[in-house]
Length: 208
Image 1: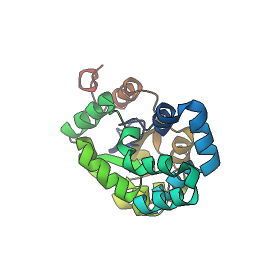
Image 2 (image 1 turned 90 degrees about the horizontal axis):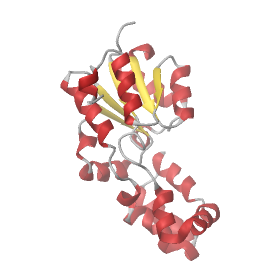
Image 3 (image 1 turned 30 degrees about the vertical axis):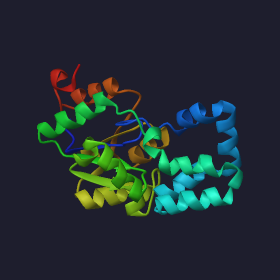
Image 4 (image 1 turned 120 degrees about the vertical axis):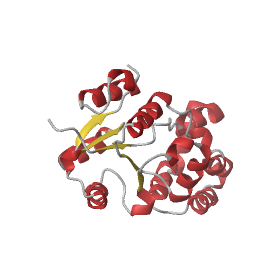
């Protein structure tokens, strides 16, 4: 089989851990975190940000709408980097190994506009993609088919020339339905093995 022409990475839980649950468990306890999430719809607020709503203004408006939880909700903005850590060093090494071989590496991520810009200031690897496709800037989020179509159109690559990893099965399934090669991310070693199998890296280059 011909090798893929570009590798597409999700970011959250592939290149860095995205764990607001852990942050709020430490702050409120698990029961308190469950109440916060259930009573305020804070996860839906984040989806709105990923879809293009302004980061700070959206969090502040949500806090104002839920005054009993306002201080905790504001943490979503002020302590965001604590929810988006630590880095996944094995995956970052794979990104860099691919680029060192001249393989185009793209990001396809559900991410807010301002929060992505901020994350780039904190994490060097987020500036290393050949191109980053960010949902808030595209006006569509995974797993909607349109986000995959836009990437295909922008790159000029046929679906079967792309290989994509994401930690969410629904995002992988949507890409596979378009003919993309896909890998469900459960750890960097498994992703490394898939890149070796695709002929993109040697075992040594992949850190295996």
